[in-house]
Image 1 (spheres, rainbow, N blue to C red):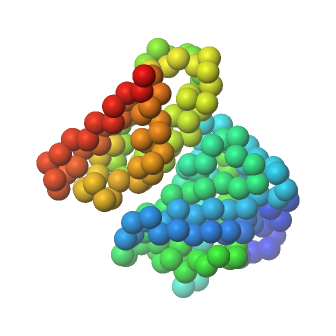
Image 2 (image 1 turned 180 degrees about the vertical axis):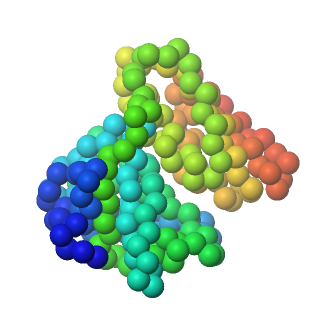
Length: 200
């Protein structure tokens, strides 16, 4: 890494400059997907709005690579942020991510994205996503259910190969208990449809 392009994580998040964040935990949630938690200084917040993402920078065999990821932690989370990352057998960024260990440092910049969620602007939202494509939906969905005044009705359809491969099952089960949230999961290898009942 070029130190001129990197700054301490105590600096404010910037779209132009990569900042260093330490890995506090790294959990393997499926055979090829990790849930990684990064620390923020003190009780600070990342500062993203629902719908925004970050750019991760890595180096593999001397080649610099960059990929976009959406943190799935609540936008109100203090002292940390979580990212769901799927690794591919031949992916360069996947090689970099799979080399991580707790205590390592990763470099991010942002925020990016102009497709922002505006509370109470829409009466109903339909969310369609496959695999880790669910990540951008998570902070938007959570921001709706965290806001008692936001009565936007949400229908979320997630597509996965198998039931075991569904990410964040507990989170989506909890969200489906809200009166204005309904979740469906379509399984391609089981020819199944899972409906989480709407809350009362």
